[in-house]
Length: 287
Length: 254
Image (cartoon, rainbow over all chains, first blue to last red; front, side):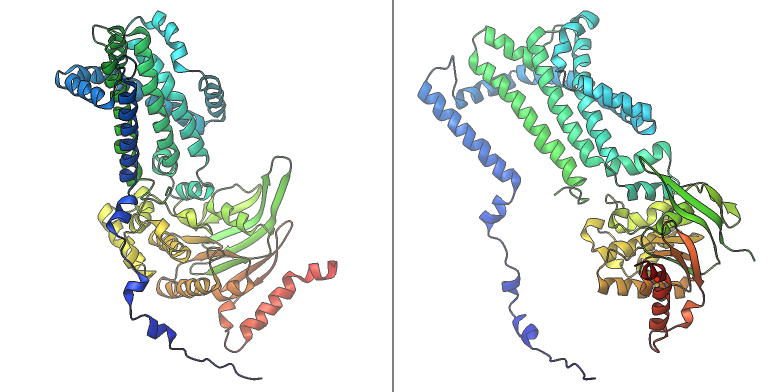
């Protein structure tokens, strides 16, 4: 039998002298472009410029006011307190509906994962009500709860409950068997098991559900306010838009719409992004 | 002194959507304290199912399983499972929090002591420098070592290991096996180890239970496995013997 030989090579020692070749710092523009926030801001600025150009060419503020007209109106309306008041009126109702919807969704999903009949119940209910637009229930809600926040909260709950419950439940179902066994190994049962294992493990899906639920609730609310407007002497943003259209104050209508959009952007990009960065992204569950 | 884990005449059946599968039939064995007991057999011999049953995840349809004299009815922290899958660590907790988690959940220790003990065991598997990292930043071998530290930190009656190194590359697997033996030298824990690799069984175990497939039955028990060594070739000889024994039927059948 022969013997193998090991020949030592010097390549590895010689090349490692210049560290800049292995690791190069990115330039400032490259760094900026890597930031999603910067890229998105660039898109928004681009859209605003297009809007401004189109508005100037059209030159018909009754149909399509320019971007700067809208911003000026918005500034005035914010300064005199109309928009903040209206936005707050909308958000207050929204929080009530969103909160109630989430609590109900939590109850439904816990019921669904603990019993088989609960699963069937949730699946049937979501199949029935998820495709039904929440706003379609508004006429009925008006009869049941009258012309007030009760009706709004009812349709909001309907718009939040099903997407949140559906996503949370499918998130729970996709928690890996290994993690479930790990949890049970430590004697976790019932609610502690849900809180310590299932919810964090399914947090990505839950967050998606919360985001969809938020978007549904926000659009349902504005639409509902447009339909029946003022309640108890104080209207929200939807009513603000409707009111100004009747006054043919189109820049104010645009300002109202812009406020709806801005609030949507803030919630999506500040609140939900921050939660995502500190949870699912940090845990490596989402890139 | 009676055995730490006593499995007598255990038959395990599980239902798929259309059939009832018998995984093991009348399997008996007993594990003493500080044993490194290996369940070895080809796929389909029910060794993993057997381990899950000892873990309390399924009930035997026949026979009894006792740990420390108590019958096994449900999962519990006196039998810590270590799985093959890398996702057994909780991804939302750091390495330290992962090791502390069972200690806190079972209220075995207060937070301060739990942290001290977790740090000690993380040091034992030499992962101190990643103590505050999240699992997704670790390599497969490191994840398995964290899982082992987590299991050992509980100081359970028995560690149940379900092919913990099977998904690792060959080099890492060898390091992990050596490390496990090193840890055993230090603390003399009891471990029930499932594998389909004969070489791994000989390296890890001091006793090996050979199971035959479809359904799993005990074929033989190998004792004093730690007397063989890889230097004088006795390990290779034993490996050959076990191999011939396990595949005797298939050889004649074909």
